[in-house]
Length: 266
Image (cartoon, rainbow, N blue to C red; front, side, top):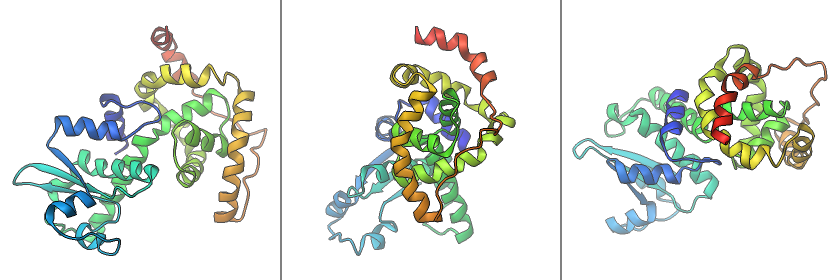
């Protein structure tokens, strides 16, 4: 699912922060795909929609993707009352089902609980990687040689425009797997993604926040957001990283793409 999300980022019209609406619009114009809000569909079908009966008709308060094999048509129904950030995640999740072809082997919602859990986890994995490519976040953190959880949180909030809660959980996850990505060279899977988005990062971020000290000053603001979440969920505040902690850089990646990046930016 991570690979599938990266493939879409390389082929679909998306910028930073990564927004789902251009992807949905692109699919609507080019694929067998249609979209309705819950309210519009209820009006079309002639039934009254209330907060209490949304799940009765759509099985979800947020969104539902339906595939009609007779017409070879996908229909995305969604709740237009959702906050915009939640809407972006929900759309990305449903797109995960769409691009993975989950609906080709699900008929009439007759799916086991075990299989449904797997499909939902896959769609969540796709959504996260589509909105927040892990290797790109790690690359930005390594650019500033600042790889603690607050740095990840800052990048997720300020550059990827994620919610506070989503940024909190993803930042904690990335801080745990960062070493794994670099030691196992997983980051090499993201070279094309980094090449695509480097011009934006260079112009909008790296030129305006040129040094590690500048980035640190930037991240202080977001630390005041992060700490209450950390205390609420874990009753602890993040301890400062040890100055003796060995960091694994993306030096090989940066060096191997440096000439191409210079060509792109100039």
